[in-house]
Amino acid sequence: MSRALIVHQAGPGVTVQDLGRPGYLAYGLSRGGAADRLALHEGAALLGQGADMAALEMAGMGGTFEANEDMRIALTGAPMRASIDGAALAWNASHPLPAGARLTIGPATAGVYGYLHLGGGLATPEVLGARSAHLAAGIGAALAAGDTLPVGPDRGRETGRLLDAGDRFSGGEVRVVAGYQTPMFPDEEIARFERTRFTRDARGNRMGVRLDPDGDGFAARAGLTVLSEAIVPGDIQVTGDGAPFVLMAECQTTGGYPRIGAVLPCDLPRVAQTAPGTHLRLRFVPPGEALAAERRAAEAREGLRRRLTHLTRDPHDIRDLLSYQLISGAIAGNEKE
Image (cartoon, rainbow, N blue to C red):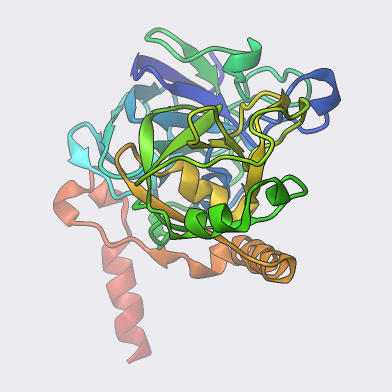
């Protein structure tokens, strides 16, 4: 058997995801892909490979996995309790996964979506140019015990790198830009929208996230009499009961609810990672500020590898301690003195 990851147990929301398949909106298929696209870039930085490689997305909890060969892994996104044969693993870090060892990933301690990356990426068959499952469209399926996933060749060797990913898992402020339907809402409704504290409702998935306002809902001047038009991830629809609904990766491609605005793409990972019961505030920004924010986010993604540090490990947790060149390193250090 070629390189493979064996699934012994998987949570209900574990799927293969990559950056999605753009270009099919006119055919009724939204982009899909990872709910938190930034997490794919973080995993790529930790493993020194391209962000286009497919990884496992784990909604709420992970599972138990085994590699049939020695592999490299990285863990990003919502932090989850993880271990290899009982030895705890640091999150936002890269690690060796020995052949035959059991990798266990438990529930999220914050946020929603965690990601398991493998050196070489998952090499499942492509459908319409991508490997990502799009459950709403019937492409792919959630993983289950007994599944075996092919893994591509890994040209890297380094592990033990750590990345400070910051906190996008505790709610906070999300920036929004106005659209051509925003004027359908009275100015006082827009002002109240920005003052309102929203709570992420339990009713949310990869199609969209409902936000419950503290207080009354919101209404457009024309009510719900809006023609069905093209919609994309980040659009904020105001539903019949006045609650905003932020569209996510697997959203439908057309919709008739009025849209009060759209979340900046660089802030969409924060919305995706806001767990039920967590609070958000939405703030309108002018186009110039939005473009500047997107440029800064792109620069930050490009600079992720420069932010890597070395992971300090407890010798008691290192299974292959004898393979480390500890003595030669000490001798080399003494020779420099």
